[in-house]
Length: 127
Image (cartoon, rainbow, N blue to C red; front, top):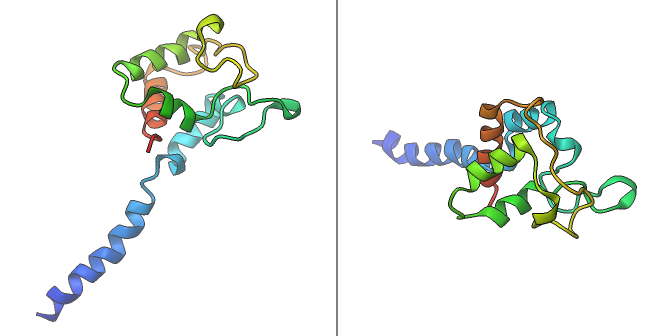
């Protein structure tokens, strides 16, 4: 019977650290994919990463992207298309907040499957 009393405490010790690692911003496999695909040259995970020469960052932080598109129908499909085909500099929601003009097309640097995986990861950063 003592095992039954100890088991919940042991389970809590095992599962609390696992849940603490559930933060998508700490997913090393996705960070590696983002780095290898060139995404981190313009984007950061957290708000406040400076751009070149102290300017605004080149692209928006992914936590900001997640916040902007949270709960919007079709957001993942739209953002996957933006990653692959680029964005329109005249209709950007990021004007005045970043130093880059538009997202360049990246279909030569990343597969559609990997782009979609990154987009879902980014959208999961919204709390």
